[in-house]
Amino acid sequence: MPRVVLDMMDRRPIWAMPLWVPEEIRSSLPGEWELVVIDEATDGSGDGAARVSPAVLKATVKADLYFGYGIPAELLEASPHLRWVHSGAAGVGSSLTRSMLESDVIFTNSARVHAKPMAETVLAMILYFGRGLDLAVANQKKSIWDTEPYYMEGAPLNELSELTVGVLGFGGVGYEVSLRIAGLGARVMALKRTPLLEDVVPTAEGILAGTIELLSGDEGFKTCLAQSDVVVLAMPDTPETRGMMNREAFSHMKQGAVLINVARGKLIDEEALIDALNTGKLRGAALDVFQKEPLRGDHELWGHSKVLITPHVSAVSRGFWRRETDLILHNLQCYLGGSPIKEWRNVVNKVAGY
Image 1 (cartoon, one colour):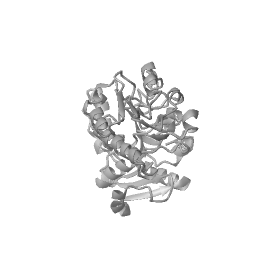
Image 2: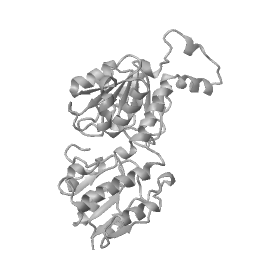
Image 3: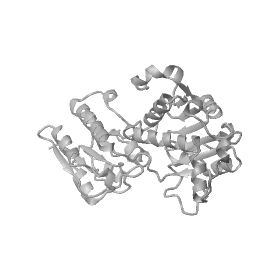
Image 4: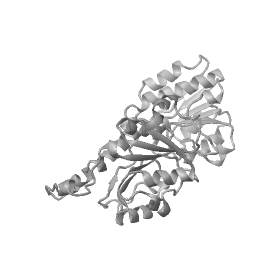
């Protein structure tokens, strides 16, 4: 009997799996298929669970499909019948083990599922600095009523229509960020891995001209840095992107720019970032992710007056399960119908790393 294992009982209440999720999956399966729902809590944070419980291993030994948070090597090695594995996490770094790279198992993730709430977090971060809310928070802590920073020559206040926003990465998150910011009047420069438009979501084509400028390559990267008032990191963590925001990159940035990172902490050299903040090169930084998480209590970033910190929560949303289930059901129909891989969604390129 063909088997699907559903191991997505997230321990965090806001992301707890609703009862209707397994019901919808079960109703989409042919009658001879078995759905095994793992009822023990798992870790859906970061790239997903690092370990596999005995109950999960027992259930997946004869499974054809596995839906969980992350795909540990131990699970793949113990489950020779697997044909498709899906992760409810966006990141895939911990899942791209030797076992995964050497297998022909189809691997999908949930990158675009998290894009909308992450884009809205980015918008909030832009406005936090753009409307001087950081100044207000600092004054409130000291019980000071001070309007001078808002009225002085060169006050750090901007309307969105006055800003150029560089979005580094035009995947799910970068796309949603670009649509929102461009729609509010900002000029958007988006950096893509390739200069081609074949992977751009069709609905974006109507607004690309004149509102979102697509760039690529090293020159495109430098152009984004040099011209942007706000730089948003929306790229995956790969060998090519790791440490991309280093001292040289900060030197190319516009004086007084703001850096926002909701992608992965390893994209930034944190010491170089702190230097750029201390020298005044950067107006500020809004960070949801860090090199090592949780960020240790004595880290300099915690007390820095120019830094806004959120604890890797930019993707949190009650809308997750509807989008996640729709993604799973779409790909399930592709699997059952033998559809070509190009019709699937969120298929991970194991070689590229995302």
